[in-house]
Image (cartoon, rainbow, N blue to C red):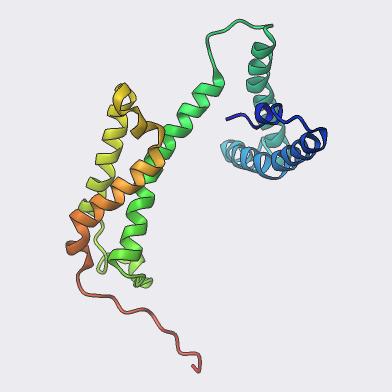
Length: 198
């Protein structure tokens, strides 16, 4: 799970230098943007008059240094602690992906298999075309989430939690198709065509 540890297994100095350069590029391009933009926007929305973009970036950076500093000092042996922020973060990501997986599966099945890529775009913003509450969708979401929660405390079923996004999306999509496929399908909705000559 740690690419730097993996790079430590490479014996060729040239490949190590190339791999470390790629790690630096990936960190600057992907991780920095992904981990700074969202909390920066959050801090700005908390108090827009007091926290501008620069101050929000600084706040994000200080919090990140404080959290990662704890882990670095712990790895150096300067701090003795049972708390592992890395495992807390990994568990949070697993739990979050377990919630998003069923939603993704339901959306894919609904759009591609049930509605055959035809949507009434204007109808998405009215109450008369699509139902306000999709019971099949909620049931297909609730079952994988409930199984994920049960899998947390069950070692023989822990694989369902460890691969939460994949298991949730596959099960959620299959349940949605089985529960709501016939009811939701209804009459086919014709695609919206625009007149280019008008």
